[in-house]
Amino acid sequence: MSRQKLNIGLFGFGVVGQGLYDVLEKSPALDSRVSKICVKRRINRSLPDDMFCYDPDEILEDESINTIVEVIDNAEDACFIVKKALQKGKNVVSANKKMLAEHLSEMVALAKEKNVSLLYEASACGSIPVIRNLEEYYDNDLLLSVTGILNGSSNYILSKIFDNHESYSVALKEAQELGFAESNPSFDVDGFDSLYKLIILTLHSFGVIVSPGEVLNYGISNITEFDINYAREKGYKIKLVAQVERLRDKKIALFVLPRFVTRDKYIYSVEDEFNGVVIKGVAYDKQFMFGKGAGGHPTGSAVLSDITALGHHYRYEYKKASYFGGFKYFKEAAIELYLRYSNPQVLRNFEFKSVSEEYHGPKYHYKIGFIRLDKLIAIKDKLRDLDIFLAATGKALNY
Image (cartoon, rainbow, N blue to C red):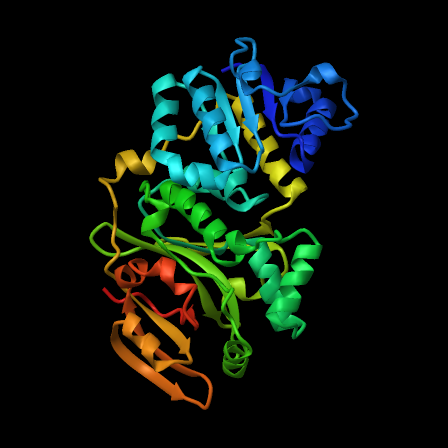
């Protein structure tokens, strides 16, 4: 099959957009060019004014443009652009994990209906080609789990806490000053970014689309020195970990939680703004992928990879959704958690199936035991407002 020429309409001209434009201009072998760039407002740029437009329809209605690349932050705007582009029969490359996670069913169906390609490698783990590998290399029925550090901002903060003995507040401020975390860091530190990425990876791991609101995500914003010292005394690091795991009877469970990680685990040594993904299977045991998960250049490299793949008519086949008889999302599995609290009244919110360890101190107390995921999902919006900290122990799910 011959390579197709891509006439690109680019949405967004920040760090990623500008970097992508430069690479495409310097790589004529890609047989792709940016014809028009849509931005929200006029600012000083090195390119001529006629390269830019301010109305999305100027690109979306242009029949000569066959490919849309969007690298904008706003999920609602991205949804409008991607949906209309697909409806117009244009190929799309997107990096917006929130938009994709919340509209996967609709966007995948629309791409199939219009017989076009929707690629989004950059939405999951930056420079790590995890989606393509799950699609092409791990496209069999032997996959057991995908576990990883999917958010560079929270991992940077935790690295400074455990490696440099910084407090959470100091590490967060440093991450914000370096541009790794926003002024409102909740999207990263409360596990939403990791959640949206996990939703996308779950589709390519097991062929199941799960609503983000139906999955437990809890982050690191409530961590205290007590929790940090507990982990250190046990020889652990705390990492914010996302996981999708295959259970028996074609069931899967998924969640995003801080986790106590021992030195023998691959993700123990994933530091700073890096991401790490462990793929576990029946025949190949564990395989580890590591790289920068965010930033202009890593994200841009993933976008460029998708554009190159489009030139060769590549598209996701979603084979696991079609061939394996259908996995089901199972929320009733129990996970072993460390629960640190101050006021014993807070325990009314938690229904432990069993308790293996308890501690009562002058200020803080903790319990370690199994709690069903569905019970936690039911109160997940409340968890961040409680004076508690939750962390998975890493023990196998009970179901």
